[in-house]
Image (cartoon, rainbow, N blue to C red; front, side, top):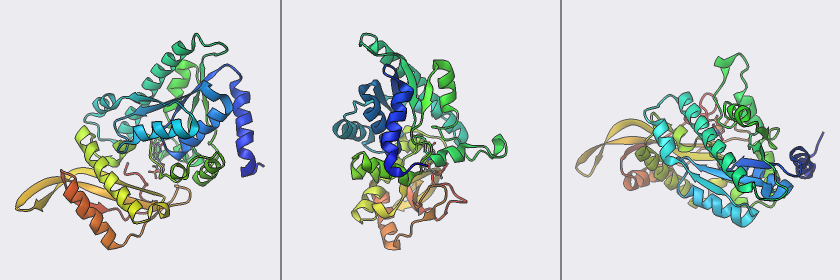
Length: 333
Ligand code: XMP
C-alpha cells in the first residue's frame, strides 16, 4: 500500500537495511533509465560501496559507452568502470544465429566478466577500512521483465530469456554467494521514469528510449559480425538523429534500426550491389508488454531510407516494420 512519493525514501532505507554497513554492491549499468535509476538509488543508499560496471559488448549504440561514463560521473557522481569486451563477445557469437542461443551466450559472457570484476573490486577494497566483501549484485529488472520471463506452462512457454532475469543471476549467485538486489522489480517503466525525475536525473536520460542488454546483437537477424554491428549502428544513429530533428523522439516509446543479414540486390549509379536490408522499427507503448507501430509520414521514412542508403556502405534497401506487439516483439529477436 505504498504511494509513489514514498518509494525513494522507503527503498533507500530497505537497501541500507539489507546491505548493512560494510558490504559492497556490484551493479551493471547500461546507460538506460532502469539501470541508471537503480544506480542512483544505490549511490544514495550506500555511497561508494556501490561499484558500477558497464560491459562494452561491442554491441552498444554509437559513442554510447563514453557518453554514459561522462553522464554518470557528472550528474550522479558515480565513477563508472567500463570493461572493454567487444572482441570477446564477437568471438563467442561467431556463427551463432539462433536468437535464444545468442541471448544465452551473451548472458553467460556477462557473468564471466562480472565474476572477474567482483574479484578485482574485492582485491582493491582489501586495504580500505570498514569495507567488506562484494555480497550483492544490482539489477535494474522491471515488472514486465519478470512477467515475460516467467514460464506459465512449462519451459517451452517462456517468451524469451531476458538476459537480466533468466539464467544470468543463478550461476553467479551460486558460484559467488552473491545475492540479487532489484529495487525496481515491482515497477513499470513510467513509474521508473517518475522516480528518476524525483532523484533529479536529467530529462534527456529519463526520457531515453530503452536499449536491451544484449544490444545490437538481438537487432541483427542472423549471425553477428563486427561489420554488421557497424552497419546497424550507423543506420540506427541516422534514424534516431532524424527522429530527434523532426521533434518526434518523445512521441515514440522506442525506435531503432536493425539489420537483416540476408542480402538484396540494388543499383547505385550504374553498379549493381548486393547489400544488407535495414529494418526500421518505431513503436508507441505504455508498458512495453503490448505496442503499436508509430505512424510516420511516408515522406519522412523515404528521407530516412535515402539517407541511410547514401551514407551507410553495404546497405541496398531499407524497410519499415509494420507489426504491432503482439504478434511481433519490440526487438527483432
Ligand atoms: P520485447 O522485444 O520483448 O521487448 O517486446 C520489450 C522491452 O524489453 C526490452 N528487452 C530487453 N531488455 N534485456 C534487456 O535489458 C533483454 O534481453 C531484453 N529483451 C528485450 C526491449 O528493448 C523492450 O524495451
